[in-house]
Length: 531
Ligand SMILES: Nc1ncnc2c1ncn2[C@@H]1O[C@H](COP(=O)(O)OP(=O)(O)OP(=O)(O)O)[C@@H](O)[C@H]1O
Ligand SMILES: [Mg+2]
Ligand SMILES: [Zn+2]
Image 1 (cartoon, rainbow, N blue to C red):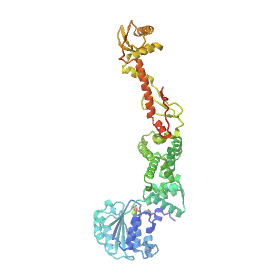
Image 2: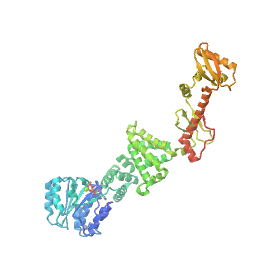
Image 3: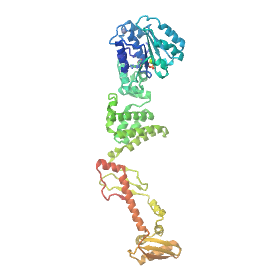
Image 4: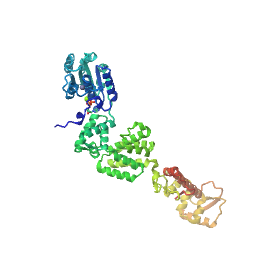
C-alpha cells in the first residue's frame, strides 16, 4: 500500500472538519440554507489554508442529495463520486497548467450543456491568477451571466493578479492564516488517529514553523515522522527544523530573572552540545520575550492553552520595562551576531548584556562585593556593599593628580618643593609660602603675616633652593596677606575635591542607589573616604 501524505489523507470532507475559517464556512452554510448561492465565488488566502478544500466541499454540498445540516452527507452517490474524483459535473481546472485561451474556450463551450447527474455543473478553477489575459477575457462573459445550472469556484493566492473585471463578478471570500493553536490541535488530532507517539513541545515547534499554513504544517509533520522513525520528539523536530525548543529559552530567561550568570553560562554550554544555531536560539528568545510582553500588557491577546505555563510564570518575574529592554538588546544582538568572533560568544555576550542591564541585579548579590565603573575617570570606587563596613572610595592615579596641579600652572612652587625633596616641617613651612617671583639670583616668597617666622626653616630653605638652582640665590620673604595660592591651600583644595569626588561617585553609583531603594540602606556619615 502506498503511503498517502497526511495533508491529502486528512483533507476535510465537510464543513465541520474544516479548521478555522469560520467566517467563510458560516456564510457558505447560510447561503446553502437559504438557497442564495452566488454564481461565482473567489476564495483567496495564502497557501495551504483551505481554498481548494472548501471549494470542493462547497461543490459537493451544492449537489449532495441528502445535505446534513447544510453539510454534504458523504454517503450519497454524489458525495462518493466527488470524493473519488469521478463526479462528471465537477470540472476542476488547474489555472497554472491550462493558461491558454483555447483551454478556457473548451471549458466554457461545455458549460452550456445541462449537468449530467447533479443540480449544478461546478467549475473549480484553481490558481486562477495564472490564466492568460485572453483567457480572462473569454471567461468574463460567462462569468457575468452563466447559465443557471453553472457555478464557478475560483481560488487564488494572488488576487492582485486578477483583472478587476473578473473580481467584480465574483463573491470574494478571504481565508485567514491559521493560528499555531489551530494547527497544533489538528496535528495532535491526526497523530492520535494515526496512533503515532508525539510530545507536546515538538508539535508546538512544528505548528509555529508551519507559519499559518495547515498544509505546510502537515508536510512538516510527515517529515518529522520519517525523521523520528515513526515518532515525533522534540529533539528530532529541533534538529530537523534547525530551531530550538522553547524549553532552553525559558530556562535561560529563568536564570536571567534570578540574575544567575553561572546558570546562564551552564545552560549555553548544554545547548552547545545539542544545536549550535545561536541565531535561531536568539530568535526564539525574541519570540518568547514578545509573548511575555503581550502577556503582561494584554493577557487576552495570548492563547493561554498554547503558550506554555513557563511563559506565564516568567511574565511575573520581569517588569515590562525589563522585557522591552531585553527585546531591544536581543534585536541588536541578532544584527551583530555575524560580526562576533563566533556565534556562541556573540550569544553569550547578548545574555551577559541583558544580565548587566537588569536593574534588580543588585538584589541577589548584596553579600558579595560589586565592582563598579566610576563616573569620574580619576576615581574608581571599590564598593563593599555592607551597611556595617565603611564605604570606601579609592582614588587612584596619584600621578595624574599631581600632573594636573603642575599643568594648571597655579603654583610652580609646589613642583619646586617636590624637586627640592623637602620633607617634614620644612616641607610644611614651604607649603605655606607662595612664590612671587624667581630669577637667577633672587627668589621672593610671600608668607602670611599670621604664620610664625622661623629663622632655621628659612635658612634651610635657602640652602635647598641654592642646591636646586645650582647657583647662589638670595631668598627674600615678604609678609603680606596672601593673594597667591600656596601649595598648602592647593593641597587642601585637592583633598576636598577628592573627597567630594568620592562622595559623588558613591552617590551616583547605581548599585548603591538600588541598595538604598530596595533595602533601605544608608551610608554612615563620614565613612566615605578617598584613598
Ligand atoms: N482550514 C483547514 N482545515 C483543515 N485542514 C486544512 C485546512 N486548510 C488546509 N488544510 C490541509 O491542507 C491541505 C491543503 O489544503 P488546500 O488544498 O485546501 O489549501 P489551499 O488553500 O488550496 O492551498 P494552495 O494555495 O497551496 O492551493 C488539505 O488537504 C488539508 O489537509
Ligand atoms: Mg489549492
Ligand atoms: Zn451527499
